[in-house]
Figure 1: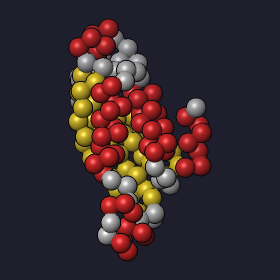
Figure 2: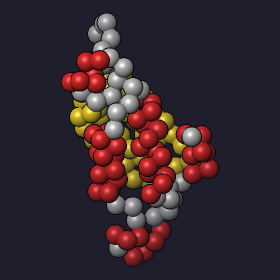
Figure 3: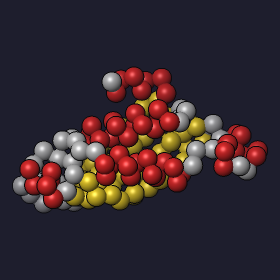
Length: 125
C-alpha cells in the first residue's frame, strides 16, 4: 500500500449558500490523499500500473469548476464518489478550504476534511 497526495490544488468555483457566492464565485483549495496498492507500479515503472496524478487533478478540477453546491461538504462528497467510481483506492482523504468565507469576523479559511475507505463509500449515498 502507498499514498499519493496532491496538495493545495486551487480552483475557482460557485459553491455556497449566499447569493453573492453563487453569482461571483470564489477560490477553493483542495488537498487529496489517495491510498492504493502501488506494487505493480513499483515493479513495472509503467503509468498503466498506477493512478495518474494528472488524471486525479483533472477529475477534481472538473467537479469543482463544473458543478454547484451549497455546502463544501457536498462538494467533497462528490469528489470522493467520482474517485471511487473511476479508480480502486483503499482509502481517500479530501480537504477543501474556502478562503474568505462570508462570516462576520476575522477568518483565514474554513476547511472540511472527509475520509472514506473502499468499504464505507456507500455512506455517501
